[in-house]
Image (cartoon, rainbow, N blue to C red; front, side, top):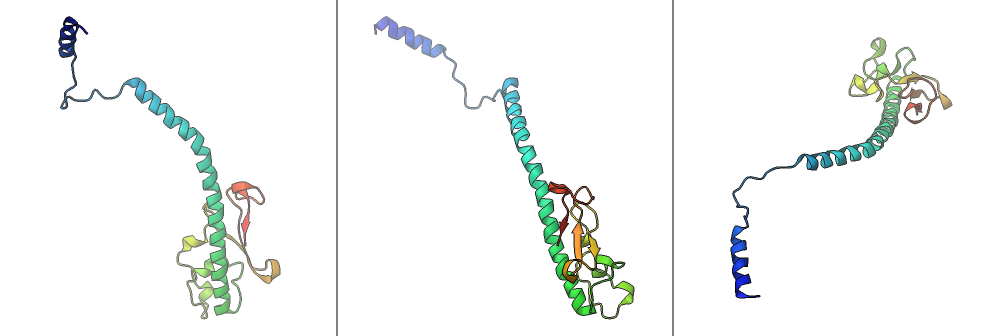
Length: 156
């Protein structure tokens, strides 16, 4: 490089503006914000059905666990009272003594909300089910017999 070229380089170097350390950032451009928003919408579109499917199966699994706990509470009730509650008293007999029963030593479940299924309907109770044991069941999200997925019936 000649001496003249070196001088020109030094002159050009002083003309270049360097950002100062304390200068404020200019922020994001509209294009950058739209790209990020597009990525978020894409992820939400892909993830939302998976989350909703998981939520539906979680409610069904919750109903199974609650029915199991109610079955245990009914067995404790039967040990104390000599029989399962009458169908008229239903599962409410686990929370409050039916007809002032002196042998009742409950409550057998902590809260009255424990007899509600995850879809907001009361669990159903049939005193004589299969094998002489009472049936506790939920009709699922649609509150109608049968169905599949989240609409399926859940029973002990």
